[in-house]
Length: 318
Image 1 (cartoon, helix red, strand yellow):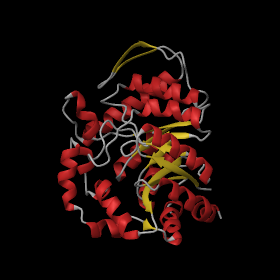
Image 2: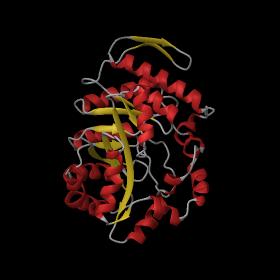
Image 3: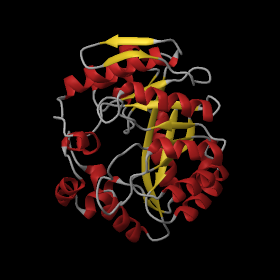
Image 4: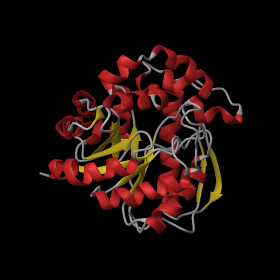
């Protein structure tokens, strides 16, 4: 049975707002939380970029809901050994209710050290090695590793995960889905694509979780909601690999000039049509997803939570 969670966007909201949203999500009947991990927002209009590991510590004290990162890049900005320590502590704070979603990253966040941004094939290699290193460290044993991309010298985690710590691997194409099936405990993708789910299952993902997320904008004024999405999240509609290779918010703002208001109105669920919101989320369940995280774009969070608590979540659960 599909579970429905709330997506916390560190790029758009302050830390205090994210904590309020987590509490609102629990009261609205969502059963899980996902949270993004960014160094930069996608554009200046979003205006935030809280450090995800600080946020997870705060969330562990604010709600009882499980938390998953969607997603962390453990390969460039943070060494996998450091990411493993952060994830292990998060698992302990959450009483084992933590899952580490990982991906090959975007230049937007990972270029900040000044390193060259690798091709996808190299990034996939790095991700596979990073997952191997982190799994070794999660055992609490002393680890030394000398691989193609990473060196770990006599490292040991003394605060170890509270039970299993699942690692979900993100991907947006067949090769990435197959990689997730091979090295991950689950698959993260943001479109309800049954073919991608099939590629994941075929690549070794039988019996493993499929996790996705979708952004909406609940509002009694649909035109205003479309304007909010077009201002804050036009980047959701950029094609191809732009999201992985553009290095700064300014570059995303330039590319987003290609995204028209009509494109947003057609692609993003805006307004207060309950059936439309239900169908948007159910598309993921029908494609074989086990967890779906819904994020509300813009400031009308209380209105969103009221509507989903009273109208949308009960319908989804039926």
